[in-house]
Amino acid sequence: MGVLEIRKYGDPVLREAAKDIEEIDGRLASLADVMIETMHAAPGVGLAANQIGVAKRMFVYDAGEGPVAVINPRIVESDGEFVYTEGCLSVPGFSWEITRPDRVHLVGLDLDGNELSIEATEFEGRIFQHEVDHLDGILLVERLDPDQRREARALLRSEFSSRRRDPAGPAPLLEL
Image (cartoon, rainbow, N blue to C red; front, side, top):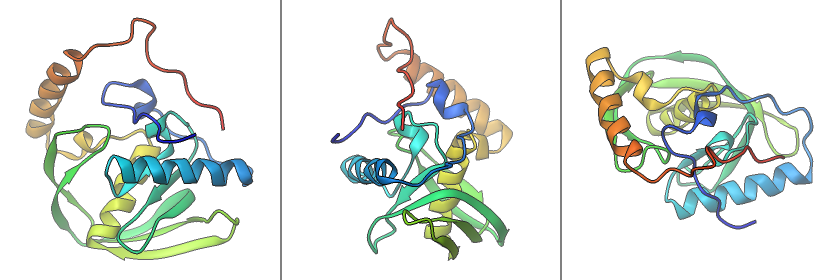
């Protein structure tokens, strides 16, 4: 399958909540492989399935210890505060200081269907929050304060509406 195109700001799939994955099989493992390849090629540290047009609840990440896929992730606990400049592969060339919880507890499944339970702080915790936001249809712009959000949306509308749009409309969702 190779590297896939990452959907950009303005693509409707980025605003939709992804659906839970019901069946874990070889196709899902293949999807994870292509997502990891796409993430590394971008380059990035996390990628949600809907960022490549697959409306399924899965993300991949690599915080420096090798890539991991997480199926049906949920953050069940968070606390603290961590301010960090954050960017996004779907909003290339832009970044903002965003305040998020410092510590999170993520649960989900691995590619073998085993339960995952991960406590993460700072950078890894931020990756989890960012990717779960994607799967909930939330972009990092929504995490800005109201004044910053207005400015960012105006800037992004200008930037992304000036790029050529496909006359056929947004690309269709990919089937898993």
